[in-house]
Image (tube, rainbow over all chains, first blue to last red; front, side, top):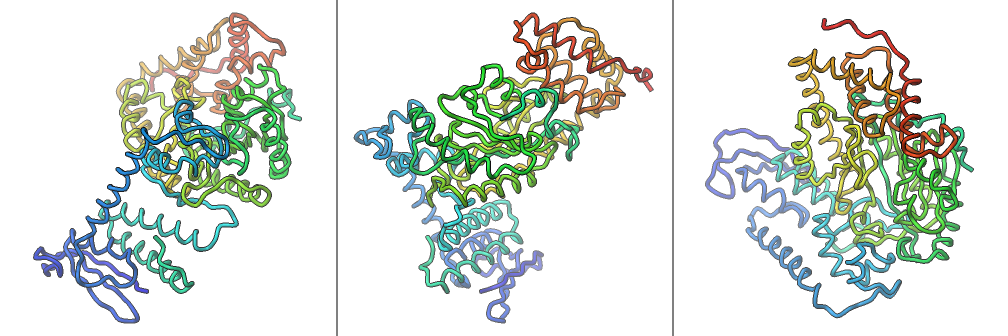
Length: 193
Length: 358
């Protein structure tokens, strides 16, 4: 578990990742040890978002953040391709077909969400720009699921705060993520994803 | 059973015009959509199934209504006029009024809550407050939802959240809306810019009675469109970040109008009052328009002696079903226009005009 403290100045230290001047200085406190990371704006963005893997981020900056994003895009594209020409499947719960849903705009029953999962997923992506619920859950929801949702929510907040260039907030959210990941690990859960 | 007699003569808490930012914000509303698992959604099923759903939900709904509630009403046996009355009162939605088969609504204290059974979803719950009070709305509706979930299982999956009849509501099932009175932005046509920026932020702008309704009386409801992928608190927070900008925009425009053209504005709002105080017949449309000017005049201190709640109430009480309930008889449109004019005259008995200019 780490605690990050972040300061911003322009003492003209060089970024530890590239040749640009460092403008952000992140103090990582882990196991009682303080370590300062000096980064430029661009590398700091990557650094803060890279902590999704959990624990103290490795000092070797990995350049494959972009890869995972384009992978995600590929999945979304694939989901879009699924629709149209797939054979008419009807919902086992209420009997309506996806085409019927399309014409009335209302689903037949809760089970439709399972029956038309892939088609709905791409539809939901276009309506909500998201496909994963992270809000309130019923009382009987397991601690694992709640943690999973909390992580999803925090990661989207982390992404948003990095986009807003609010690194103080990003560092705080990243710490929260690490705390929850540590909880998940100690409860014997495989890393949520 | 709902006491229509008493309802007709009263008005809801959310019309009090007292909450935070009430010069511009009329009311705040949060609604949640929930469905029973193992039952088809109301629009796609039979009356027999709708009847079963109503029977399952009625008990729990009545039980969670807070003390002082107005009770549960079966909507399907009601006359068209009574259903329309409840719509005008914002106690049920137009969709609920026009839906098919067994359905009902639990109405909370002071009309600040309504739990609709068999609307487009098995359960649509809403909490209303006057002024900008989203946190209070959320606390209340979240509590009601928690209590209901002790008794019934709602359709939910871990990926898509609470499952709803229309995929536009899935996830949180939550619609957060704030009703704003924006006369200055309408007069100056600046309102278009508000539409554009709300659209960019994926927020919807609708009229007084929600989906598809005209923006009568310069009232606009701003609400979230995305219900999946954000938590309830995140959705509320993003509304709370956006709304103050709109309020400031309206207020700034009002101030500029007063500064640049006080006498013209004073004339306009005074004429509105004059017509409302003396007309013998008046359409709903003209009434809304004039009441809007009057409300602006009162908020700017150009008109004295009339309270905002009186105006807020007139917006509702001059609607067609209200007039007919108030007079106790069904009326054709021309009779309604006369009854409307007479009702307004009574409520707006002449006041001393404020001294010219200053």
